Length: 385
Ligand SMILES: *Cc1c(COP(=O)(O)O)cnc(C)c1O
Image (cartoon, rainbow, N blue to C red):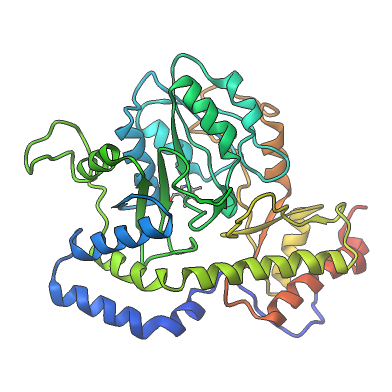
């Protein structure tokens, strides 16, 4: 399709725009690490741990090599292994379930609710069995799952609640920050997360001192003291270089988060003003304070055509996630069929993430919203309505 519009490019994420403003401070921090020649754990990692613990309103934080390893280390620390079952949602990034499988345990899925894409707490009790060891609620896209009923179920059955907060740093549930709600909170510093490093990184928050101590041992091959191994851990350590970069960025996280929230507010208001009904697009409902919008995910009628139309006009979007986990080849050992988790499957066919990064300009946002209006209202050939 030939576009008549001025060529504007709006990427899904523009990390260069972020780096332009803080490059000097980052280089200074990197120089500090290079000068020290201390590359693994050490003072930069310890300082980051303290700063993030404070940010998340938690007593302890343990830096690790990735969000995936944060999940694996946490599940290891609470003793999840073969024969055990762990409950989570099929509408999440693969790592949530992959971490459970890596430990030889069985993933038990519970569908999401229609509203916020998070696990439907009302469905959890019927999934609990004597083998259940933990529940992993995921705060998907940056909005907290409904933690109170989940914590209650955990208490009632003696289950560990491990938050997958990879997309939700700074997000809140009834005034408490993500990561401080369950027994442990798992964070990722993958570059596209709200707090992203210069590569892979992750962190676990907890208010449980014994658990924090265990996690420090597990991330370092299970050694305690050095060269004496009572448990099998892994090399789950965080690099000092990553910690130094993240410490600079953490100073800006609140500002960036507020900009993401403002961008989200703009889109949602604009889509409404443009006369787009819920039969065309549905903006993400905000059911909790505080949604930190790692992604701004709409539900869209004729989603794939809308995505193509946006791409043809210079706007990059993404589908998180196109295939619910119970339908993934490595996960479906014959236990699952299409239709088993209908709300997740419906979401997988409707969701579309729009550019939401903090540096987005007003013109960018207006352009994206106007394109969406054009797609539904001015391009009758492209929709089957
Ligand atoms: C990013 C992410 C992870 C994994 O984090 P990595 O740092 O990439 O290993 C886990 N769960 C969710 C929900 C994520 O978004």
